[in-house]
Length: 573
Image 1 (cartoon, rainbow, N blue to C red):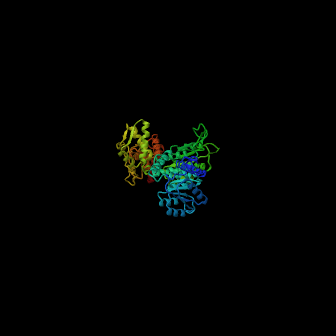
Image 2 (cartoon, rainbow, N blue to C red):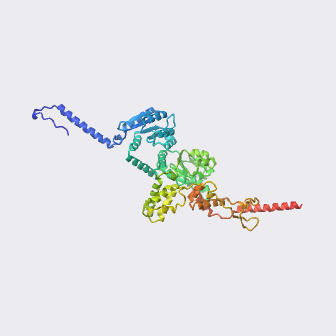
Image 3 (cartoon, rainbow, N blue to C red):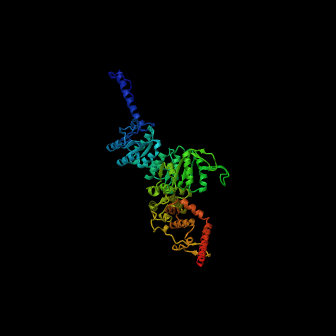
């Protein structure tokens, strides 16, 4: 492309060397400019600017109380966005609201520690004014609870200080594609990938909040307290927190407090030494020691009795563990993740859960949404479960027909994801393959589409039959009696052992629910594991009154006879 040296003798023309060098220099600059534009637009290097072909007209608002940080963030944006961008600065929450109202920014970088307005309130106000704007909330590591509140208030993402160019580049890279239809699909795919990376399936708004709280809370050492109904994925959340934390290389120890007998749970948590109790034939490390350097997940923590709650509180405060029967204490480094399906505030107010332990554990609260509140996720979950179980059973299923999908999406799912998983597994095992039909599901879902707890006397669970028991009273015949509540002279005939009363209530509830133990547990407001444990224990119990009850009845009967004798003797005198 460069010009040849001039021929001074051809046709008598005269060229100067200056003109020759000028033409060649101009061509060289043109080639370099084109090469540079191709290099930048291809994204060949990590620090390249975002291509103006992909970007959209930008209006950016930076709300940061530190003047130096405002300048740094502005410099990052100037370097990252090649297209001219209008950047506005604010140092208070009120200035940020006014600037957002005037300039209608596409992107807001918002410091959550502004002095005049709390961070989550400011995010809420900005989200109401600008529902389509990307809001990047900036928080410090020590205020993760504020970051979680900001995500719930509507922040698009949370960045942890100190920010650098790559953090902002990553956030802007996600934002620059949201203006096109292709971008929407890419974002949906990223959200889905985020859920899969955390072990979840679902793209509903409720689950997007869960994914964001995992990203914010995982890097911290703060305690996470997970609440939610049974079957919503609380343990899966705990696993995601551990997997994305700095402790991922260490152990995650899970302990279900409701599945361990009270006499053994202290040993399970803290360990024991040889001879500490009957059956302790060797030293054993507890879950707290096994989780040293990692994460300890205490599921159904509200099932723990008050005495053990006191010891757990001391463990949390001192980070020391003392085995049962051991006089020495050992220091451990453990992050706590706890979960319960109960209303924690009600447990505290009723005295079943220590208030000081509640404040120690309730640092980052997370509520797992029930399946009925996860719009659109039922279909995704059912399809994923169908593929998984079909592969496991060696069968071929093409999917769900329209009627089956309608049933899945309108059912209330009191057992949540676990109930759906069990249902799909049942369908796969009990059928040969093909397409899942509505009839296959209706045979298993005998309850109404939206089961709810009836209130008042119309609830079948509360319609009790008269109590009929056998009492070996003073009659000595052991005949069956139907107690008359109007006869106070025979109180022993009106009372059953507590375990038998409880058994009658639970068995009646399970029967009313068509054998669905999960639904019965939901109606009785207890954990399904509690029902399984109690029904197992009843197999070892006799259906007759206990020996203590028989002795008490005999004593009452004998006392009545003595009293009648005294009355007769007094009358004779």
